[in-house]
Structure formats: C-alpha cells, structure tokens
Image 1 (cartoon, one colour):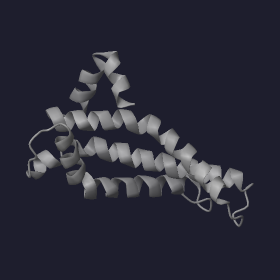
Image 2: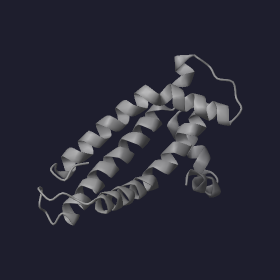
Image 3: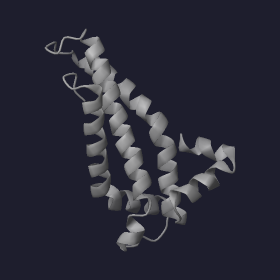
Length: 141
C-alpha cells in the first residue's frame, strides 16, 4: 500500500498480488486444511486446487481492501503530503485498520473455500449450504 498511488491503483496492485499468492500457495493451504481435519492429502491437482476461485476472490479482495484502505489512511495521516514519512506507530495503525477491515470480507470467503475443500462442489453450492443455517455464517468469523 502506498500513499503515492491512487485508491484504484492500490486496489489493482492488491488484487493482483493477492491472486498470485493464492495460485502459488494453494497446495500448501490445502495440505494445512486437510491435516487440521485429519484427512488424507491427495496430490491430484484437481483436488488440491478445489476452492481456488473462492480463495482467489478471498485473498484478492482482502489484499485489495488492505492496499486501498491502507493507502487512503496513510494519505490521511500524512495530511495529503506524499513526501511526509510516517512514524512506525502511524504505519502500524494504518496496517491494523486496513487488515481489520479486510477481515470482514475475507473470513466468510475463507469458510466457503474450506467447505469446498472438505466436501467438493462449487462455490454456489457451498454458500447455499452455509446459508441454510444462519448460525453457520458466524463460523467464518
């Protein structure tokens, strides 16, 4: 996130790097989830990459929000001066607020991805199953 970039530029960079991260780390994320659930790990890419679209949407939107919100906050804290160097506490505060904001979007999407990995099916089916019992929506947080 940069205070020198516009919100749109920060958002574009965030979405792009978030999706690249997912595509590279999906097999590890899958293995972690299967290990936590004490399930067998498959080396079949069609299984390992189940839920990758939800995960791309999740991480892409999360980093997009983090970059856009963080850039705006940094610009606000700097008083609009692109040359002002923020202190470490200012940088950290902007990062915490940006990360907390992105969690509101990312947590439910992470739940959809994990449910796809566990049970298969497309995102629409998993979302429908989660929404059938409103208590399940809270599991994403």
